[in-house]
Image (cartoon, rainbow, N blue to C red):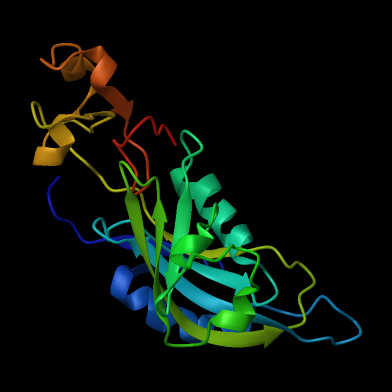
Length: 221
């Protein structure tokens, strides 16, 4: 897949920015546009977290994550948006400690019941892994924390990369399918017509989706 300038849209003001510019933009846009819904003026703490594919950084999101949310809630969010295909195991690595969906206590692993606000703070860099066979790794960083009166305590997407414009390796049209074998050589991006004649066969094809797990295992988006 050819390199390109990754861009995304701010969900708060609908402006478009480059990947690098989005972080700077949100630092000023969040205070202006995440408003109050609580007449009693109760403050609730959120973290601004950026997440991207560790080896596929062209796929990224900026999130507002409630400090009271548990790690398992963030894990499920990633599964729903980017990862879930076959019910694989997953884990976070935070400050040298491993938090697993199925912890092995004999190896010092912890569960995911911890509240995010108890273990994260601005500046922390951490990782998430999904599927310990055909692993998709995510890199995360806590950009800042902020307080708001908004009542909705769900994880919110502040911005997400626009779907990459990936061209067919054969004819140059927009790719719609990818070969799960050829992708490991940086090849196998195909349009529907060219996919019909691909030597690896139809059973090796998966749809092109906007996720760092594109072309892996049985992930279809």
